[in-house]
Image 1 (cartoon, rainbow, N blue to C red):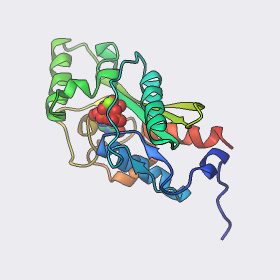
Image 2 (spheres, rainbow, N blue to C red):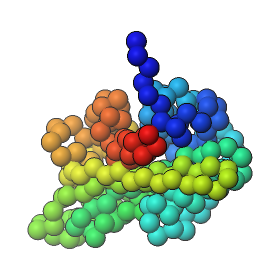
Image 3 (cartoon, helix red, strand yellow):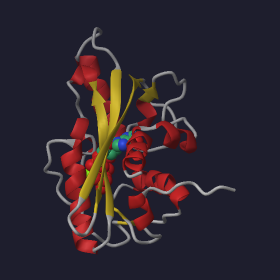
Image 4 (spheres, helix red, strand yellow):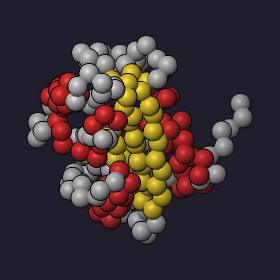
Length: 208
Ligand SMILES: O=P(O)(O)OP(=O)(O)OP(=O)(O)OC[C@H]1O[C@@H](n2cnc3c(O)ncnc32)[C@H](O)[C@@H]1O
Ligand SMILES: [Mg+2]
């Protein structure tokens, strides 16, 4: 069996020597699955007890950068952060970088999805249901070097939410051309076509 070519930056990442700078279990699960083919078994920020930084950036990239840099700094290890969110066209891109914050301190995504739905109802019957997910990935090295990549997928929103898989806004997001929401989809299928997979493919391609 021929060995898969391994990108340079990834080659430097050894099992147990990469931190996933995220406190979101759903994301950590997906990033683990994306890294598995490279033989990388990362440590999560939670396992290292790293603090959750305040997300003061005004873009997905800026927030991914600040999370990755803080984790690399504190751990002395390379760190991969993900800042992502749902952008609804009829809501001028909201909740966008505030996607986690719309779920309140309890991180209640039933509530967050209801909020999105209510705003769309308020926007009136002519407001469309188009939306996209964005994922910014930042890979920070302890020497301060940082690389960023952004992925995106387009779809529409359904109501009521459907499916028990995934996390966050997945049950209300229907990728263009699909009949199952991300919440109904087999997780492997979502991992293969999500905004996170798109950003990850760019990360891998850039370091060849
Ligand atoms: O910052 P970290 O610790 O990584 O975790 P977080 O949950 O706060 O993550 P973000 O700040 O990036 O907020 C993004 C929110 O957008 C939502 N989101 C991102 N990717 C998603 C996906 O693949 N499916 C559904 N919702 C997603 C999800 O609810 C996240 O909480
Ligand atoms: Mg966050």
